Amino acid sequence: MKRFTDKIFNIQTECDFDELALQAFDFQMENNPIYAEYVSHLNILPKRVSSVEKIPCLPIEFFKKKNIITKNLRPELIFTSSGTSGMQTSKHLVASPELYEQSFQHSFRTFYGEPSDYIFLALLPSYLERKGSSLVYMVERLIEDSQKPESNFFLHNMNELAEVLQKLEDEGKKSILLGVSFALIDFFEAHDFHLKNTIIMETGGMKGRKEEMVREELHDFLCKRSGVSTIHSEYGMTELLSQAYSDGHGIFRTPKHMRILIRDTNDPFESLPNGKTGGVNVIDLANIYSCPFVETMDLGKKHSTDTFEILGRFDNSDVRGCNLMVV
Image 1: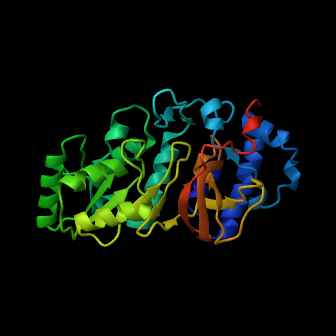
Image 2: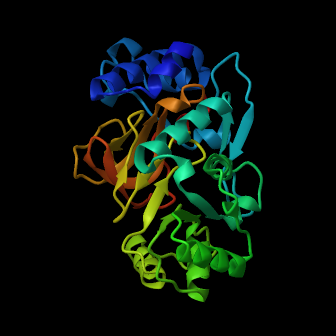
Image 3: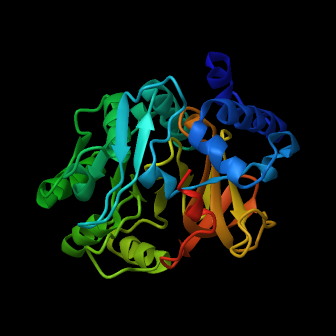
């Protein structure tokens, strides 16, 4: 698979992606027994999967119930999702940490340039307080790549963060303040700024810590308290090794090795055209050693091949196909 992984980050066209996605499907059918059995239970013949839209996506719930990894490989990392007490969490068995690092570094450079151009200020208390966060792993590496002594995590030391942020502003240094939503709210409720050199990037995540805000309300609050004109966002999850980014207004853009498909909420095997709302499926070619084809619980719509927005989540209802988790 070395030749395959080398190609992932050199995709130039949609046809390149389609070719690699179909190769990934063949590899999964031969090497991922859980995915292969799931497809078999759907009565889908592999030889009839002739386009990306026909590739079955594995319901994300499988990452809670099963060990999703291709055969003859062992995980070098195990990422776990956050959850409230008693909730079963997802786990992502990562056979190649190097591939994950290639993926997030490639995605960041695609949309923001070199990490060394920025100082990273990370406000991720809920993630730092537990083990196994893929987000913390990513940000740790970006902090290292920045090679800036000011780059750091901030847990509960909000006043220190405010002092550092103001100092960087006064010195005209470019920074990215990356934080979970509820922590950014807490921070900007206590401090207001007129930022000119800082990107504020929210990673989602209220998790019952505060009353839920719709995205527009959250971004409007953060803009007013920080002085920036738009709020950036990162779209990622434990079950994926790639991220999409938004530079404002909730419109996300995917790197070329990642694609969003929108499924009909009544027929999960039917893809919807651009502009229609449905369930979000993700093809993440960096997931080649777990499963690149993931059916999420998010609701969204596509605007173009590489742009989409997230509109909400399914309301605790079962995803059609999850009853096949006995495989």
